[in-house]
Image: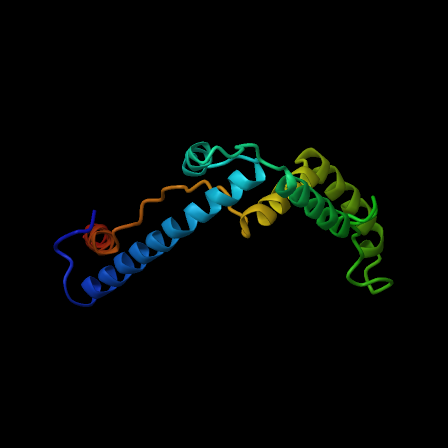
Length: 170
C-alpha cells in the first residue's frame, strides 16, 4: 500500500513507479494469452473455442503433432551447438607460465570441481528446459525467490544515535 502522506517529489516518483508497473502488467497480460497459445500448440492441444467451432462444423478435433516435433528438433539442435561433446567446458589459467605457477596447477582442479558441480545441479537438463521454453514461447521465464528485507529508518536511527552519544558524554 502506498503511504498517503507522501508529498512533493516523492509523490511524483511513486506515481511514476505505479504507472510503470501498471503498464508492464498490461503488456504482460496481452502476451500471456499468446504464450498460452504457444504452449497449447507445443502440447498438441486445442483451446475450447476451436474445439467447439470444429464440432459445430463437424470437423476433426484431432491435432497434428508437427509443432511438438519441430520444437523437439530445434531444441536438440541448439543443445548440440551448446554442448558439442563432453569437453565443452574448459578452464584455462589466466597467466599460463606467468610469475605464479599456481595458476597452471589449479586450473585443472577448478575444472574438475566445476564439472562435478554441473553434474550435481543437473546443468544440462536445466539448460535443455530453458532452451525448450525459449523455443516454445520466444522467451525464457525464470522463477526467482525474493527475500524481504526491512530497510532501516535512517532518520530515527540517526536521532537514536545522537541521543546515545549525548548520554555517553555525560
